[in-house]
Length: 305
Image (cartoon, rainbow, N blue to C red; front, side, top):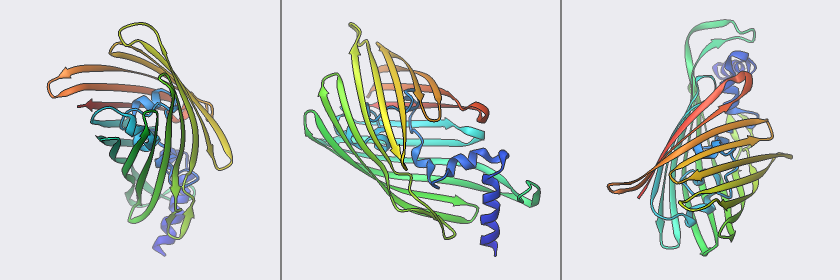
C-alpha cells in the first residue's frame, strides 16, 4: 500500500506546477538525467558537440573523441539547474598509446519535496528527496590518425524517497577527421534497458546523433572560429542543435541554439597555461534561459597534464 501511495504522490508531483524540476529530471522516459550536457562548453555551444568532443565531457557525449585527445585531462562541473536543482560532473581521460580510458561520475539532486495530494494540499509532515547518479567507464581506440571509435558503459541509479531504480546503458561513438579543420561524428547514446519504479517502466532515452564541426582559422596566435551542428533522432522526433565558438589566444566566447525546444545559450572561457605540473587550466561558464522555468548557470574547471 505504501508503494502505491508513493507512486500516486509522485505522479501528482509531476503534474504540479510547483515541482517542475522533478518532472524535468525524470521526463517522459524516466531517465532524462542521461541527456544533460556535462560541461559548460557543451552547453555554451548549444549541445552541438558530438563532432568537437575534445575534453572529458566527451565521455558522455561522444566516446569516440577520447582517443584523439592529447594528454591526460580532468574536468569538474557545477550546474545550478532548474528550480534549485543541482547537477555535478567529474570526469577524467587517460591516454594509453593509441587508446584512451575515461571515467566519470555525475549526480543530479532535486532537493526535498513535501508530501502532497492530487490537489496540491499537504498530506503529512516531513519531506522526501529525489536524486540520480550516473557512473561511467569508457574505452576509445584510434584506428588511424583520423578515425577513432569509443564505447561507454553507464550505471544509472535513481531514488525517490526509499524507492530506487538501477539500470544499465551504453554509448557508442565514431569520430572522423575529414580534414585538419573538419570533423564528422556518429553517436548512439543511452542504449539500454528500461527504467522501472515500482513495476512502472519507462524506456531508456536512446538518442542517435549525426554531427559535424568546422574550424575556421582567423589568423595567428591560436585564433579560430568553430561552427558545429548536431542532428538528434530520439523516439521518431528530430531536433537540431547548432553552436559556435570563437577562440582568441586564451579566451573564448560561445553561443548556441537548440531548435527544439528553442533554447539560446551564451558562454565563455579562459585558459591559464604552465601552472607548475599542470600544463593548462580551463575555466568555462554558460548561461541558459528556460523561459518561465527560469535560467541555469554552470561552470566547468578542467586541467590538462
